[in-house]
Length: 72
Picture 1 (cartoon, rainbow, N blue to C red):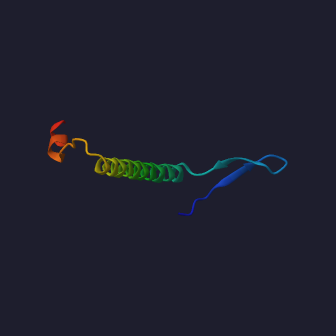
Picture 2 (picture 1 turned 90 degrees about the vertical axis):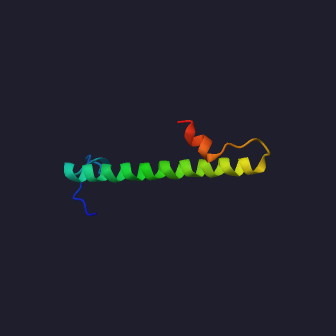
Picture 3 (picture 1 turned 135 degrees about the vertical axis):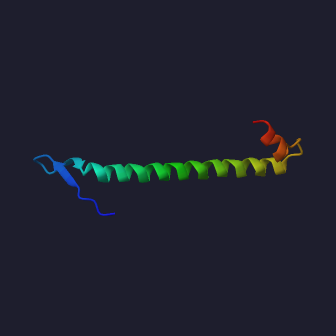
């Protein structure tokens, strides 16, 4: 992805802002949203695997998948 960007700098050459075409910014935001969704799914899966691991280590009563689905 090649984006035409412009940097806004002060007299000393310190960059304070970046400008880019709005259409490109919308594409960037779309990609960020997809990455956030992917990260959320991975995080939730990791949590689920951690819970399964803890359940395997205990002798507590476990809920069946069918019972879990029937809760909703």
